[in-house]
Amino acid sequence: MEALEKLKELLPREQFEKIKAINNPELHAFLAEWIEWLEPDKVFVCTDSPEDEHYVRWKALYYGEEKMLETPNHTVHYDNYYDQARDKANTKLLVPGGKKIPFLNTKDRDEGLKEIKELMKGIMRGKELFICFFVLGPKNSVFTIPAVQLTDSAYVAHSEFILYRKGYEEFKRLGRNAKFFKFVHSAGELDERKTSKNLDKRRIYIDLVDETVYSVNTQYGGNTIGLKKPAFRLTIQKAVREGWLSEHMFLMRVNGPNGRKTYFTGAYPSMCGKTSTAMIPWENIVGDDLTFIIPVNGIARGANVEKGVFGIIQGVNPEDDPIIWKVLHSPVEIIFSNVLVKDGKPYWNDMGVPIPDEGENHSGKWWRGKRDKEGNEIPPSHKNARFTVSLEHFPNVDLEALENPCGVEIGGMIFGGRDKDTWPPVREAFDWKHGVVTMGAALESETTAATLGKEGVRAFNPMAILDFMSVPLGEYIENYLKFGEKLKKAPKIFAVNYFLRDENGNWLNHKLDKAVWLKWMELRVHGDVDAIETPIGYIPKYEDLKRLFKQVLNKDYSREDYEKQFTIRVPELLAKIERIEKIYREQVKEVPEELFEILEEERKRLLEAREKYGDYISPFVLEK
Ligand SMILES: Nc1nc2c(ncn2[C@@H]2O[C@H](COP(=O)(O)OP(=O)(O)OP(=O)(O)O)[C@@H](O)[C@H]2O)c(=O)[nH]1
Ligand SMILES: O=C([O-])CC(=O)C(=O)O
Ligand SMILES: [Mn+2]
Image (tube, rainbow, N blue to C red; front, top):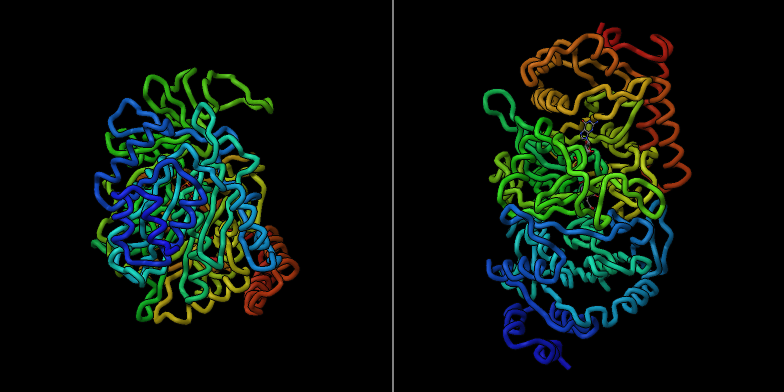
């Protein structure tokens, strides 16, 4: 039977008409196949109308996946206690023959599709299926990628309305020409708290051939929100094939002297400061997690893939994050997830105000001192508890940049991670390739609560993207190196480290110091300040930072602090090169030879410097 005829049988008239209005046989076939397979009791097709969005929002409450809070438009959602982060082990790339690719979790495509189909057969009995259309990137632009989401979670659909641009009209406009991504999600059976129950059958399978992602028996956003991390695997593959960049990066405007606007991207692993950097007072946010960068007439132009924030709430306090704090306390549409709720108010760890001793949280009824099955004390909120809100509600959003179909010109690209002892707080690469290799491809960071598993382990995480990598790493890096050659003027590359510690484990920097590093980088993009040449790139001069600390933070910055922070730590840097080289030689294997040459040059520079100045080199010595 023809797909459209089948859909006519499967759907009530009103819903069918909405699908019929999109002239795309591939879409019809996909929907007919899956609606029949999932066996929902009810189907709702979302158009771009405010009524349809409202319907989804309402259903999240009606089905109990979200609850109302006291402030209008605020809701809370809980994920299962053991479903609080991305499940790396059960997230697999389906590739023909199950080809083993270093650092990628692959599975035979046929086997994977068979397994996921069996898990999903009839899984929506008794439930309502939401069919939603969105686009990645600004509408009607070189960045736009349409996507269709099927989900039985009104919470997931609701989150997507907050985070992505609506795409029903775009599907209608494109008709048969739409090349689109597909996402099929089911939260599976729910318990009495409306959280996914069958976590042993949690699976996130990415079909790279058919550009479709399946996610089942989970609700946590990182596993389920199709257009976020599931789509990211697909866009990385697409970007590498087509010669552009799809990155785990914030996008922000740094305001220079005399009204100058300079745009930066920044790639830091999950929970390592993208949101807190892009939200820093003084500057303007465009995006906080995912950026597309496309070469247009020799210029690298960037756009936010999303239009909202799925941000970490722990630690958000009125002093360090005044803007987020204010938005979280205003009556705009927000979903709080996995926070403590007492008398209709949300609370979270380290919020800088007193927190009640009991209430409801991700563990159910909670009291201070409560322990879980493993004997661990349960904090008020989960470390990976988050808030979901549209960027339009932030007073610091750069709306023009967010909506510009041509994106914005990227002046600088930053890499950073959780590194307690090796990299200085900020430095600039000698050139594109030096930055790509020694800052991007060599990135390491300690693991965090954004993924299930042990925290605080130093791990190789090139470009902060390893969790999402979907092509062989060597190909990804080659694409990066070549990208620079397509540009008349390549963005400057920088590396930052917010997480340096002293011998006693104390942070060497305050959370707001990054405001100064940003201003310095902005000046460097335009050649407005000199810098000190070191074996690992250019670092700031003390006088410039002293002036900027005063100007930006109204703080005195001492020579001692500067020296401690910017000392070139030769043994640690050499050890890092050893580790990275070994990983690329022995594990990744197929890598452009250039990567090894660039690492070798850096090693040589470090060895020569050690000969001259010793293991720990003060920046004042190098300045001379
Ligand atoms: N010590 C220290 N911690 C910081 C700093 N900046 C951010 N953090 C911590 O980093 C964590 C938050 O990182 P986010 O900015 O929300 O993370 P993100 O990179 O946006 O992560 P995802 O949304 O998971 O991709 C919190 O635990 C912050 O306290 C800093 O300058 N110093
Ligand atoms: O995708 C998520 O779960 C949230 C996020 O940004 C990340 O983990 O990098
Ligand atoms: Mn992220």
